[in-house]
Image (cartoon, rainbow over all chains, first blue to last red; front, side, top):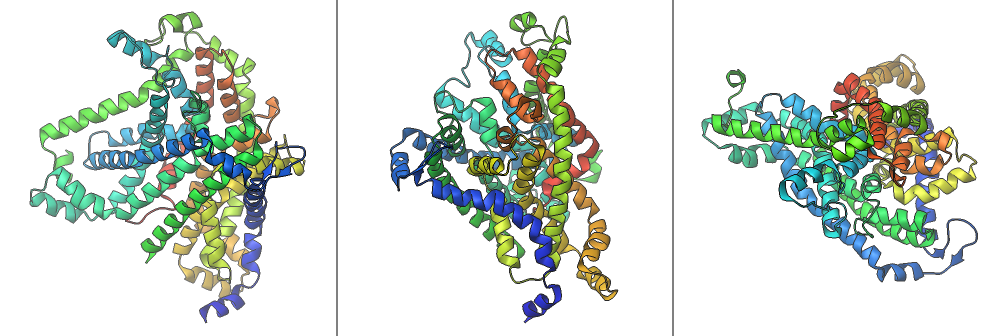
Length: 292
Length: 282
């Protein structure tokens, strides 16, 4: 009956406090999502008249090579998450051992997060150009250039490595170092007295002790891959060469804003929405387990 | 020296290897930035013959061109006006909502909170088309208000989540005591709870600032007129211009970096807090 009493206690005040948030969410998030679903059953250029075409957009999508490339590319980005997790955890564990200047490393590696995906995308687009500084150095050594952003199979992996592993490293270090700070020091001392190696301590003590932090990190990376990659791809490769660095999110942008197939892009959006719903369920389950 | 404080599982050789690895990592991750800094100081002629080494004859012409002809100065000013307004609104919305979810009891608390959590991970591109249509319906295309509202709406779910966890952890006795004194809910929030939450509000402000400053899709669609662009939109558009010279683009990047780097230097502590906010105990 605690709830009923609570209701009497707080009355309408909570809803008044929440009113601005709920109004904004209704207008800028719920309404767009609902309209997206409706639009996905129509043929529409984004302006002018629209035509109801049932499931035709979904049929087109199922046969569209661009769509499947986007799905495969998004899946490929997901495959970089384990690498990102292990690399970030390891470097955090190195820094935790009191490596000299660890604060400098932590700060410098955070710079990409600070500058944001737009600036980082442009910076790497300059750095990795065929006639850019890195390629001139490579050419000086090997005699030929590496066409990082122009070779289709390579470009998407460059995007994946840079976005998932490199751009999130600094954020991850701060995050994992804070979590590791909470581990009881005596466990480490005991491990040391037992003569446990760094690796043994890492896998038996450090990682298990911050299990929840690691799981949150993985979920966070999924969110980043599915929902936050647009700006980086837009400024680094613009989806190219061809559509070889499309992700689901980037594909939506191209269908809607370059090809003006808004109805069709909405069908892609519905697919992305379903993926995000799954990620969200995983995240909420994880929070519930942590709070138990 | 560190040894005496904390024993280490690394032997002297392993320690050296790790230290070397970290130095290499640091250098490699700074190279792209070094590239931009040096390119911004080179003439086009020098950049094409010497893209790697330090500039032989450093010039500032690229900066002048990027700042004025490239409008980077104007774009920075635009951002410096819009983003703080957005941040203030964002703080008000998130603090009120966070307090409601964290310290008040009402029937729809749980379902609404789950909805907010769900929305905190939405991709912008899922919303972009409909948001730009909506803003145009409200006659807010090419207005600061349009873009600020879209920012606050999009980023508020995560901010609300952070404030909710913060208020949830605050002792309930504070609310009880104020209530016994006859304070209204509004007074309790603004005179008792919000002042106590100031460290977290500062963190929230930094998170909001960074999110809005770096936001691209909404501002790109809502602020179509060139004179209104934010610095992030401005430089993204500049990057897309065919045949734009690398030294000028580099100088534009350097100008665009000034504010984020200043924020970092001034508020590093809150940035660290921001990373771990809304996150994990253990």
